[in-house]
Length: 228
Image 1 (cartoon, rainbow, N blue to C red):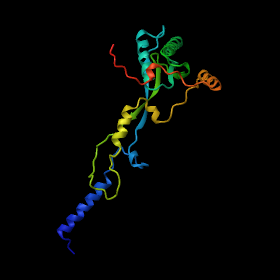
Image 2 (image 1 turned 135 degrees about the vertical axis):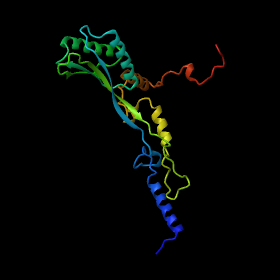
Image 3 (image 1 turned 180 degrees about the vertical axis):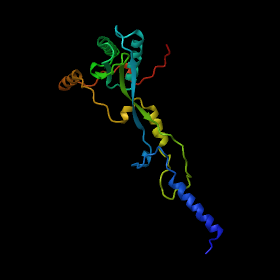
Image 4 (image 1 turned 60 degrees about the vertical axis):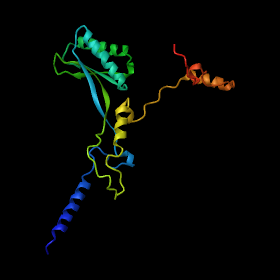
């Protein structure tokens, strides 16, 4: 039996349409989102940030001190974390390696890095006399999803499903604005409680006094009309 040309063309068009629907998935989209607004997720990528310092007999050089100061600022902006100082062994002079490592540790502390956030370890230099001192930490970055890479016909709503790009712009904007990408991995640990403030509030409560802080003129909501 011969299939009429028009029917054959209709069958080919239907097959092409089904293939297009099957391949309309955006690459960065989540495979099984819980809700339509969670079709995209900001992925956190961990990358090491490291500075390599030559070992000197006198310790840190002025250029190395400046590089470590910038490194400490980058560490603070990245949200902190453990800084690991890796001193070479079985390579450079042991005394020079120690002085350079201790100088790096002292400079980081002077730049505001807590001592318990600095870890000093050794690594095997395998006899290399020019093996460097390694100072680094793990930095978190956000992999922002690419939006608008592939679009579908908005009129095709037979399956009652959201469009493939739905929610991508919101996720991309949030990922680009977050200050510390590590916050996407989980909540930060709670800081120690202020015991002195707690005792002050308890004493005022027992005495029947107001426990809140005193309100000053800057907190009354009034807008000054005077330009000085």
